[in-house]
Structures are given as C-alpha cells and as structure tokens.
Image 1: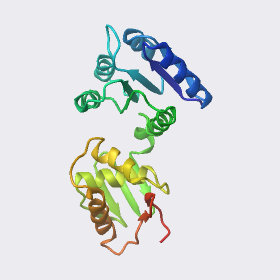
Image 2 (image 1 turned 90 degrees about the vertical axis):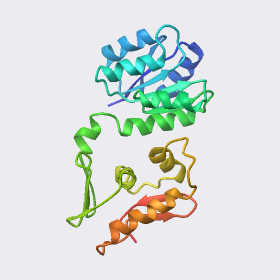
Image 3 (image 1 turned 180 degrees about the horizontal axis):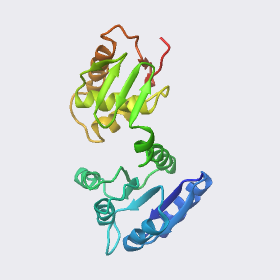
Image 4 (image 1 turned 120 degrees about the vertical axis):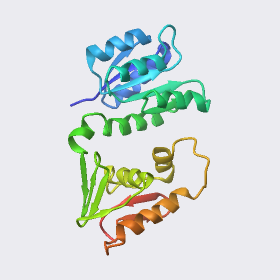
Length: 229
C-alpha cells in the first residue's frame, strides 16, 4: 500500500519540486498552500506523513504542528524552514515535530528523512515495537525493561535509547552521524567521543553474563547489531 504524504507550503515552486520527487518515489501526494488548509487536509485525508513549512501567513507551521499534537494526532511531521537558528529548530521539535530540514536542501536528503519517518510512523510502533526482540535480547518499550537470556539489564536512559535504536534497525549499519542525531540531537556540543563511550558501556552491560557481542563496529561506516561474531 502506497504511503500518503501531505505537503503544506505556500511556495508553489517548493510544492511542485516535492510533488515530482515524492511521486517518482511511489508516494501518493496531497498538497495544501497554507496552514489552515493543511489542518483540514490532515483531518480529511489522514496522511501517513506531513511535510510542513514553518513560514506561512495566518497559520504558520509551528501553530499547525501544535494544534495537531493538542488534538491527539500523531502523524509524523517533517518541518521545513529557511531559518537555521538553533532556537527555531528547538521550538519545532518541542511542540511535537519529528524532524527538521533547513532550506535550501537536497531532495535526496529529504527523501531519506521521509523514508526514516515512515519506518517508525505512529501505530506501527504501538502494534509492532511494544516489545522488540533480537536473538536473546528483549526490549520492552513501555516498561523500559531490557532482558538478555532472561536476566534484567540496568541501563541508563541514553543506553536504553541507543539499544532501542539498534533494535529498531537490526543488521543495518548505522553511521556515527545518524546515531548522534537520533540520540543526542543535531546541536550536541559536548564530548566528541560520547558515542564511543556509550557503545563501550552498552557492550559491557549486554555482555556481562557471558553473552556474545552483538553490537559490532564497521570500520569507516559505523555500528551494526548482528548475531555473527
């Protein structure tokens, strides 16, 4: 079944470009030229994902996203903006946006983000990801409990998020940049080796009862969760 994408933007050139690119990738496209029309389209068409421009007259993208979340609508939202200020991006994420892209952007990057958001769209997580299992590891999303071979692992919040990301993407190489964006955010400015430190701690805890190594390093590419040694 083809995913349905709603584009809300008052720039016809952007709408035209996105419509062509997304349609070529096999998505069904709906468009709206302002925020008020976008809100109506969400209710009427129930899209799988919304690409939402921030700077629109009358009802801007922030307000559209806020109303969607206050109304209990969990559709993934990818916000577009011409402003690159940190506080601008933080505001969008704080009100419930799932991802953020600054104009001008490469169509290939937008398509990659669309694919990533659709892989974890609402409903899918509730139905399929309540409990994730890989080999002898079981991760419960609701209780935030992790078991390996029946033994409970005591993980910190960041260790849990990191393991959750790996278990959502088993046998897939995750780049360092992708992991940093997902777990620490676009604007993390702390220790440069924070990921390596957390990978080491997570390995120690998941292997402490004699379990084989599942989180493996792929030199020059990133990390992967897989069963072979």
